[in-house]
Length: 302
Image (cartoon, rainbow, N blue to C red):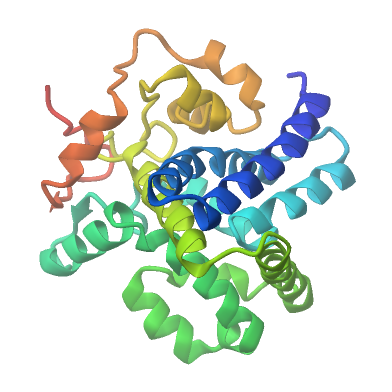
């Protein structure tokens, strides 16, 4: 499939200045303008994330060096490490809808209260996003922690991140550390250059966190328990889907992970059910349910 490298680079060059403008407006405008800026930032900042997602799958550029270069440069807008994101996302494609990666269900041996807390705070209140920059900061200060058996089998296991942390431990500490440092340096640089306020920055990134954290599971919640087919091609406004580079066509993406974003619309199966974002989102507020067996059908309901 043709990779739209030139278009991706043009989008990259436009997306970053757009995020800078919105962060500046949230820091220096009136309360009304700050709220508008934060709302827009929630969607616009998804564009560099989606470009990073393209690079994770090697479809930002057909040239591997340029692909990884732009993936690394797209990551600080999140902010995160490109390598950490790649480890997490490729692992997600292997573990999707398995017992290791369920947020809408709870297993017999799990506490429903704890699972609901993780769902509400993480996916619906935005703290899933906050965990990622926090984990980058922890990596900067104590990278050895991610190779510690006590950490992997202790906190990481109880929080549901054990498989992810085990895979991180197998990669170059220096490379990940440098990418985490790049992400932190970028955030410090724009804070200084744009004279940002902590209120404006936090307002924008929390709005982004609410949108991004919810979307990460709205596009899977209540779908069939199938590693490949356990996702949705969501119905959203064209501008929302455009800013996310067709990220909402998530079932098509899981079936064709090497397809560039420009190819996903034609890969959507018109015979498949396509719920709206809001339908799945509001169902999540009903809390977790007992997990059906692997291979079980969708439980979204009519």
